[in-house]
Length: 132
Ligand SMILES: [Zn+2]
Image (cartoon, rainbow, N blue to C red; front, top):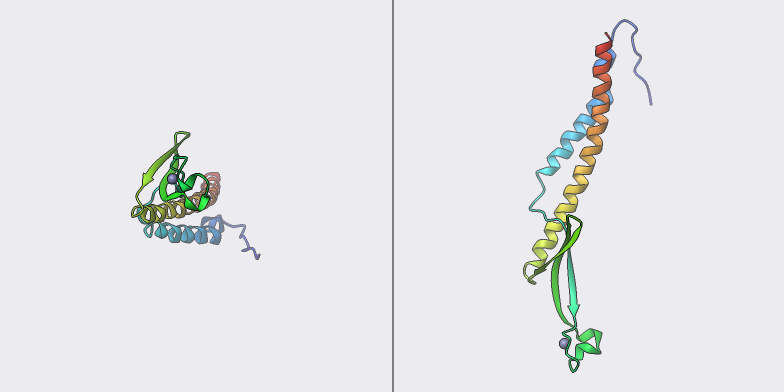
């Protein structure tokens, strides 16, 4: 990495450091990604095959004869696991929404990290201005 020579005469070189500009640019790009997010939903869609509980039913002894598939959305709310039954038609919609949620979370994490970097730069800048 090459360093920009700092002139002794002024704080001008501190005013606008190149990496801050790059971080801010990246922030804007990521923020635009938020607009691509569609309806989202926290949780995971599970597909289950169930035993009906009748002793005479084939499902009791043969795992391949279980009933279903049954779908449910599972997520945590205030520390508790919540299960919501989904119809087979609804399942793909919720699965896609759950994927959007993960995408959103990844994006938010990146924006959070980047924000902290930018804030550190901005703080340095503000501090250097204060000293003059
Ligand atoms: Zn059965």
